[in-house]
Image 1 (tube, rainbow over the protein chains, first blue to last red):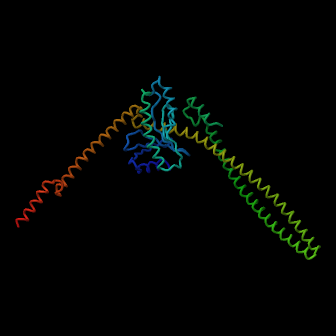
Image 2 (cartoon, rainbow over the protein chains, first blue to last red):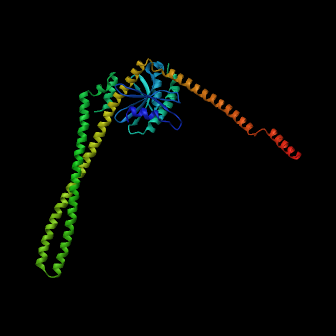
Length: 135
Length: 230
């Protein structure tokens, strides 16, 4: 499945909890799909594909949003908590901190949906918990 | 080649074009060529393996046939000896000795094929491991590059649509607000639902003459009284 296929199939998907998805493809050097959950006010999840992985990314905050004196503490806290967060891990891309999940390209759509929903719930939890480190 | 180490060096150097910094286009081609070579080697090894395995099976079949032939002729020798045909027995024994020489040659061949098979299988496993490793390392480079490019695409998109990526705190505020709105709306809808449903129900009951017990009893009384009068 390419990015357009995901856009079509995700738009028609409805989870058992009744969540539906709003998809928007962003074309560029690499195709990206922006996915938002309709019933759950949340962060956009950006989905991109490589040869063997599907990456689902939520952008959390950038370096300039971090309180300078709390930066090291924040980084350590992120390392310490990363493994506790279901299906997702932290990373930094350029100067942006992200939370992401990587799936095999052979994953079913159900798994991709599970990742998107979990990523959203995780992102809200992470920002709420890490609020004190941010300006 | 440890790709992760190269990625780290590139990040330390603050390189924008990570993929290119790690392996230039020529390097990437060499890397992809190595993968192709490994795949080709694997294909050839598989082909060789099937041939050698076929030969090994042929040899073991021949051994079985020769063994049966030997046993058959040995019984002929016994028959000849019982009939005191010493000369004939000796002649058959000559044939058996030829068959045995033939058999030991086949056994030798089979042994050599078997060791060849083991060697080829070992080579194939080694090539598979190498291939998996090349592919994993190439994945690292490509993923690093892809995420960079995807981020650039997303940032460009926000730039052109005149919207910006909100800061985390702003986003959180917005989300909390919207969730509160959503909850409030749900609560209001539920309340409204209860009220309208409640009203409808009592209306329906009234229409059906259910619920108002007093008027019901009075109606019965009135009906009975009316019956008595007649």
